[in-house]
Amino acid sequence: MSGLSGILVAAMAMSPGSIQAMTLSEAVSRGLAINPAVMSAEAEARSVATEVDIARDSYWPSVSMSAGPENEVFGEIGYDVTATQVLYDWGRIAAQVDTASAEHRESLAALKVTSDEVALDIIELYLDVIAAQRRVAVVEEYLQRLDELAAMTQERDVSGYSDRSESERASLDLARAREQLSIERGSLSEAQRQLSVLLQRELLTTQEPVPHSDLLETLESPQVLDDAIAEAPALNRSQAGVVAAEAQLDESRAALKPQLNLEGSLLRREIGGQVEDDQVIALRVRMEPIQGLSNWRRAEAATQRVEASKYTHRATLMDLERTVSGLLEQRDVLMMRQDVLQQQVRSAEGVAATYREQFDAGLRDVADLLSIERERFEAARQSVDLKVELYRLQYQAASQLGMLDAVMPGIPAHMAGDRNE
Image (cartoon, rainbow, N blue to C red; front, side, top):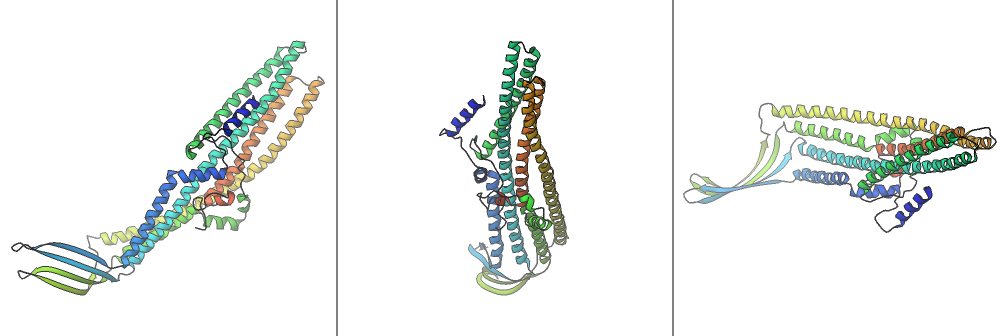
């Protein structure tokens, strides 16, 4: 059974169709390149970058023009062309530029966060495929051993060395194992289907996704952990939000004060019944229109937004610290479990061999052999899941900290949360 399935998988992988062998980094690179959420975040970042240029254009003179009939009797047309240069505005334009620049940094950080989240989704599904493939292999090996035991019990029945209870017990375990194989193959198909949706390509053959470095081990150092969290894209995004809110507060406060402008106008207007040309150059002091207490309330609202953004920043920091600390704790627990499970697998293999010798000598029955094979199978299956979970923790930590390029070289650095951007 296992040999036939292996031949089928190999044949499908070698066919010139859409089924492709793909490493984890290749899968992530492809998924990021075609993901609409990443494309949306990139477009948003470009849009906000344009807003920065718009804000800087406020340093240039503004020109306004209007035209219309001035004298209804003679049908003459008047016009007003006014150029205005801001001389002093209490830092209002500078605050607008600072706001746009901070929002641009925030959008870049948001792009990194989105890219890392999408990349982690792909990684998790890839790991699900890996785990399911390994579990299928473990069940197939277990089935092969059960087939041998079932064949042996049938020979004993025919020879009269035992009653039908031995073969029936072996058949029961064999049926359960086949059911488990169906479940694992279903899990594999589901993981492959979900991954193919993200990659827009079917994927059957994979490679062991070993992280390039043990990131969690380096994060055991408190200083390294603090530095990594301080550079995390999510924290950079919230910090940029604080800066943007503070710049908006500066702008709202500057809007409460008069602005000094140099204005020059070319006019053609009706004066004393005659339409005449006129030119005016003057210094003018202008203020924003005042409607009730709205101007002062805008400043108050901006102050409240600053306070809210600082709380958001603190909450983001706490979430990062809690998440990464939790991953470190899980790693320690899983590594201890891994050592125990590996010992269980080795012990089960040794006990199985001993039981087989004792069975041949008439000191054990088939129930003992089936029981130890079941324990061996369970330990092997848990060991497979545990190994993949340790990989998963590394990639989850890297995604949280924007360091996927450290554990998975070869992916686009600007899309995977490059910390040097």
